[in-house]
Length: 67
Image 1 (cartoon, rainbow, N blue to C red):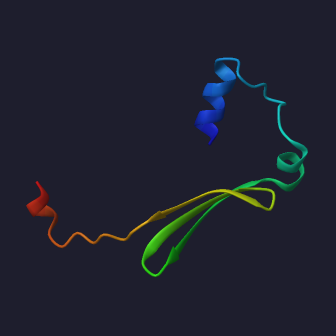
Image 2: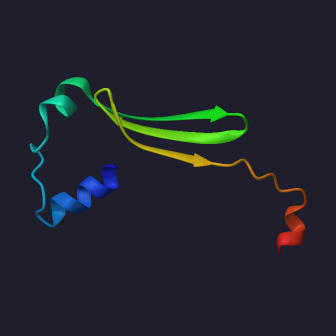
């Protein structure tokens, strides 16, 4: 998020002080949890979830065979 914000500011799309009252007062969070072996990443602004991604846990039995 920080690198995307830096790029947007560098090209003039946003100003450093541009933010909603919710983001300013309640904050922005990115959480990672494990649910049943899957990695779940949740992004929220205030109390609103704005993104949720699930990555399955895929074990590598023998990494040498991949190469």
